[in-house]
Length: 390
Ligand SMILES: Cc1ncc(COP(=O)(O)O)c(C=O)c1O
Image (cartoon, rainbow, N blue to C red):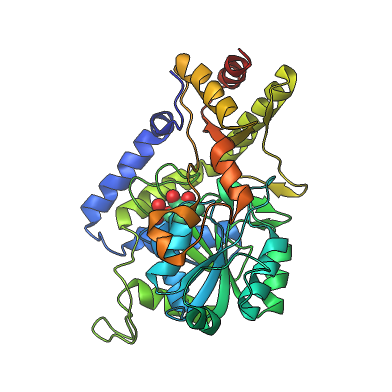
């Protein structure tokens, strides 16, 4: 039986080591900020090339903590995409700021830098004819301060950071890389996690590097920012436990999850290679069968972490037919994402409408994701594509 993501196959490979590591944590008794946490942070920093890795309780907390560390709050605006997991925009609203949505590029599924530049200009001019803006009180909109961009590396492919960082620099904005799906990806010689001023990742079990519960990490090079993030992680702690110098969270990664991740990092490079193999097998089979779908494109010089292998069907009916053919053979598929965030009820107060972000909306109708994990065999990948060909 083909799994969408096969965590059991991975577990079978690391069972002895991971159970030993968990047992040692139990016996050690340091469940909060035990030695495995600092050890993992050193390994994560080495892996990404970032100077600091600060682990935390989830990818969502990573984003919230990054925004808090940047002092983002009421009266601020942060640009992000509507075609992503809820957390990318939710974090902005959680700290009291306004998400300004920017449409995606139809090929990479990532923020369109040309649209980003227009959105920044539109907000600064208070002119929604330049780019769709929240339909909120005009005075409130005019008083918003553009602060930063959360660019998402969707499905594992890094966004176009050369363009995004340049626009941000020109307009004095910070950039947060939402690398929740892209840990292990590369752009040029840099790893995901080191492509912007701050990066946030998730260790949710289904992510390329996942733990056995919730977890996340924040990456940055700035010493001062790292120390603020470490303080926010523990209720704004100052120089000792009961000195609180700012507001914070209970944002720590459990020691037991750090111990699990330490074992999983040992096999991570191999797993990344296996994901490349599966993606290449899919791409070749799609071309062989001449399937009427758009396969993912990885720009020259980049490597996707292949959190998802996402196809674009001709339209909604074609997608439903392809998914049905696969379901008839017991092959699972998923739709990431069926609804664009700008039309989610949670963001209704922003007043966005259908039609504001055409690419995002079209992708919600047309995309679907195939099984993708390092343990998917080539013949299974080929049989999945053959099943779609009929
Ligand atoms: C793009 C993106 N951002 C943020 C998150 C949030 O991560 P977590 O589920 O660990 O809070 C996710 C995870 O699902 C995600 O896919």
